Image (cartoon, rainbow, N blue to C red; front, side):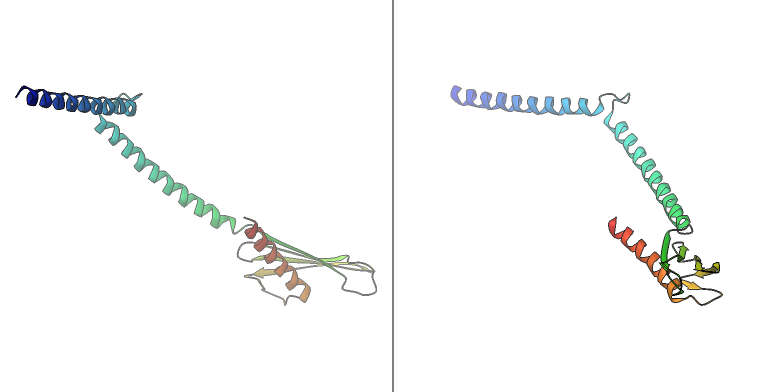
Length: 160
């Protein structure tokens, strides 16, 4: 019977040693978690983390809203530029005339034409809204400059 007692005592001490090792591991891990905090309870530490998490969510929502506002405002500034040089009159040399399309994110803006001839240079401006002229028809070259502005924006988006 003494052998059975010795075996049971051995198992008991091994088990106690294993439990002690687990306890010290958990205790050391707990101390690592709460190290540097004034609150020593795990519950208060977790509550503090949850409060900071809520604050972070509110900040992210605010930043997201602000980013959306900035993005909408940005669409109202000149974003697309198209420049086309051409020769409208065959009696002059070179492509000294040009068309400059300046439009925002909604394709609203202005098309400026500068036509050079031997007798002088003439300037024209046409309002553009949603990619179409409001008051006057766009010439073939002006429409081409608008399309060029759209292509520039598409290639910029593809690069990103």
